[in-house]
Every structure is written in structure tokens, then in C-alpha cells.
Image (cartoon, rainbow, N blue to C red; front, side, top):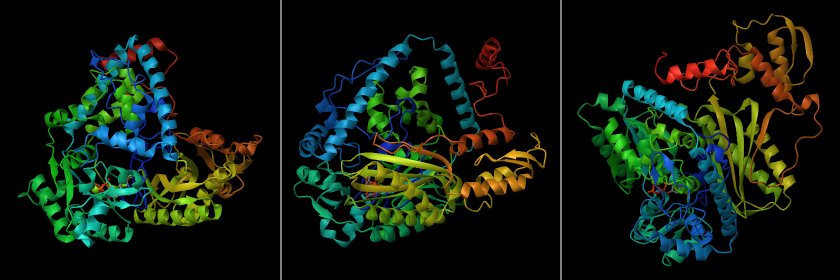
Length: 635
Ligand code: TTP
Ligand code: MG
């Protein structure tokens, strides 16, 4: 992936997949943490190679292990970060683990990882006791719900149109680009980056266990002959441009994920070129990339993005994997797929799942897993994602982010300068993708490797560098004030809750202007401003909308739901004495809910057919309704 290329993955403040930069730190660990575990910023760990194996029988899950894993084993596997990276399979993992463990002991990175590892162990222990409690419950209802959801998913799958989705990913991208200028490095172990961090390594170096996001000094222990090359983003961006020209030949609306990776939907291309098969199109595409750049790419061809992404890694480097789109082929493929291969399952999720005996995606299957646990860990959603028929269009982008790693930084003036630079980059990316967003997340990593994110959601959209910087500096100021002596090594900004820029009206203004025939509001009338709480007799909706807009623009009034989360770092209490003006957002939500014609969001609905219950307090009729749905007696 790239330096300031946008990453767009599902995230909801906690679930961020960030980009990285100069020194290359990949935080893939942040995606899709199990809901109920509140895994926060917890990065990935690999289950110990020595951990006892678990079994799943009759839907019951053995939960005895993980706590027996020694702290040292747990740390060794954790420090491996991603032992499944293509090209690293030739060296025994335990040898790499031992060297990395010994080389990093006592470093700030090691201490931070140790702290996080202890947290995960504690979570696993608490999870295991909860799982034991669940085992004794009557779960027939939940099993029925899972079955019903699966029936719906399958029906949708059967009736929906098959698409051919391709994930293309360049091989050892930064390193391969460097080799173009220095061909003598081709057969030598080489990595891009510095002693503090590597961006990537060529396949020769991977044979020694060297890989992305590994400190250079540790890589040197694994491979003393390793040659380090400094990164040069201008070169990578220029090559990326050429690759994208090729992508556009096969799918003009391709979806770039980073400098070296993209999703393409080649269904239309195939219809226009009936002489081709999906495999021949992708071979041709890869050959064209090679012709233009002298670099190799690998690809996955499958029914959806998730499967294509997994496939792209299978025959790396310079290979492609084709997965037929029929149900049986997909089910067979998924059944044996190790859970760590699922995009979004990082080292924490992997360790947690493995502690429950879940090693492959087959183990996620509803029939073998306790459904309540399934729901608790949210892994059903991963399972369903395999069956998804989503397209890979750009419009589905959930967030756009940039980040930079740098030499330790302590001066706040420098921090603000970096923030301003990131705001510019983010604004440029937002413009490029014709989008704007309401939630801005600031990500910081300290020199002690403490990683935390602070997010703020505004009622209005942001897209310019000034708007972004204005919001971001408030978040940064809070941290600088709360943590004297703060020393940073990484900073990132990401925008989510995105919307197209081309929409002429947004947010509250649009809402306020929306006609609402089912909940008529007399006009003019007495209305209360949800921001300043003043009452306005005989005001028209239009004037009220303008007033609310002005209130929201007033910087002295808190402008939305400032969300703050993190890793327990000290931060100033934002809440002073609560005054009427301190609670605008709850008033606003309430006000908007009253005005909305749709049912309240938290109205209980049937878990099977999603119909709101007319009288949720009448449990007997609720049960009758759900039973009927489960038995398929309702339409
Ligand atoms: P990747 O596609 O993940 O890795 P890669 O292209 O180097 O190797 P592979 O053959 O396995 O695809 O990332 C693309 C580029 O993004 C990579 O060359 C360097 C950069 N990068 C970082 O800077 N830091 C990281 O942690 C990772 C994973 C990548
Ligand atoms: Mg790559």
C-alpha cells in the first residue's frame, strides 16, 4: 500500500485501516475487532506455535487453553506480526520468532507490545468464562435466527447477477521499483526503509523472515547481509500512475486501494470481449503492466472483493488465482481457509479465535459454532462477507486516510506543521475522490509505541485543508495539553462518514429542508433551536434552518459529538459544568428524531423479518411472531 493513498475499508472510528508512509508502519491490526471485546487499538498477535490445539464438537467450543501459553511464547508469536506474508514461508517461524524476540527485548516497542499482549490475555480469559456460561443456555431461538439469515443470504446469492471481481497487487512494490534503478539488487536480500522501520523487502530477503513493518535493526539480525535502500515516494507514485492506466483499460471505474493495489470489475469487459475468459483477461492485464513497467503483479479473480483479495495473495509473486463463482467451489475454498487470511483478521482476532479452537473459516460455519458466541464476536459477518455480492466501485469508500511516520518529534510547533501537511494531503485525496466527510480521526503513535486515535464528528461536512486543519488541531491540542512531554513518531488523519461533494446540500440543512408529509410541522410555528436551546415563536422552517446553521458555525458552541477514544492516555476533561449550551447534540438528535418520519432507531424489531413490533411489551405476541417467522409461516 502507499504513502498518502487513501485506504477505504469499513471502519467506525475503532475500525480503521490506515495508510502508512515514509518509514512504513502497517496497522492492519485495527480492522474488524470483535464488537464485544472492545479491542480498541489493540494490534495483532500471532497465536503461539506451541499453543494447544482446540476442537469444536457439536457446536460446543473447548475453551481451556491460551492462558496456559507462556508469556514468552505469546510475545514471540506476537512480535512476528504477520508470519503469513507471501515469501516468508520458507524459514521456520519459530527461528524468526526467537531472533526477533531476542533482538527487540527491552526496547520501547517490546514494552508496548508486552503491555498489549497482557491485555489480550486478560480479554481471552474473560471471554472464556463467558463462553462457558453460554454453553449451558438454550440457544434454539438463536440457531433458528442464524439459519434464517443464511437462507436469506443464499437466496440473494442465487438470484443475484454474478460479477467477476479482480484484485491486483504488485509484488514487493517499493523494493521492485528500487530494483529497476539498481538491477544488481535483484538477487540480493534487500529492503526499503531504515534501521528504525522497513516499508517492504524483496522476495530474496523474505526468505530470511524480513518483511514490512519490521525495524531495520531486527531485520539485520535475521539477515546480516540485508541491503537497505531509502524510500522514494515520487518514484512509486509515478509507477502507480502507469499501473492505473492499465487498470482503466479493463475497468474505467476501478477502485484503487493503495499505490500498488486495486479492485476491478471485469464483467463488462468480458461481455464486450466474448473471446476472453476471466483468466485470460487477467493474464493479459498483468502482461500489460509488465510491458509498461517491467514489474510483476499478482492477482485474484473471484466473485467478490473479499475472495479476490484472499486469492491475490495465493500465487504471489507473479501469479494469479482463479476461484470459480459457483457456490460449491466457494464453499470448499472458504472451508479450509485459515482465519488469518481473512482481510481484517489481525493478530488479536486470530489469537482470540484460535483460543476458541477456530482455526479456519470452515470453523466459522453457523452449524458448528455456538450462535451466541458467533454474534458476540461478530464473526458471522465475516462469513457472510464471503457470500457478498457487493461491487467494487469507488462510491463504496468508507474512509480516506493519510499518515506519516517520522523521527521522534517533541516540539508542538512541528506537530502542528505536520498536521497541516496531512490536512493538505487529505483534502487533496478527498477532492480526487469527489467526497467530503463528517468524522475526522487523528491517529498518533508515541515514541513508546502507544497508539491511539481521537475522533470528532461534526454536524457539517469537511473537505478543505483549512476545515480539516481547524478540526484536527483541536484534537491535537487536547493531547498536547493532557500529555506534557508527548513525543510522537507517527501521525495520521482520516476522514469518514463520507458523502459525495456534488450533492448541493448536506447534513442538517438538507434534513431541515426535507418535506415531511407524514409528520406535518405547522409552518410558521414555535421551534426550539437544538444548538443554543432558544425558543423562536412563529418562525418558518427555512429561517430556523438558517439559524441552526449559524449556531453550528459558531466555534464557541460545541459542534457535534466529539468522540474520544484511546488507550487510557491521560486527557483533559472536556466537560465543565453542564449548562444548557453544553448539551446541543442530544437535543439535536432528539429534535431530529421527533421530526423524522421514520420509526425510531431503537424500536424493537423482529430479528428475523425486521418488522417493528407493534407492542414490544407484549412478550407472548413477540414470541409468537418470531416463532412464526422462524418456521417460515410469515411472508
Ligand atoms: P504490500 O502490497 O502489502 O506489499 P508488497 O507490495 O511490498 O509485497 P507483496 O508482494 O506481498 O504484495 O504493500 C505495498 C507497498 O506498501 C510496499 O511495497 C511498501 C508499502 N508498505 C509500507 O510502507 N508499510 C507496510 O507495512 C506495508 C505492508 C507496505
Ligand atoms: Mg503488493
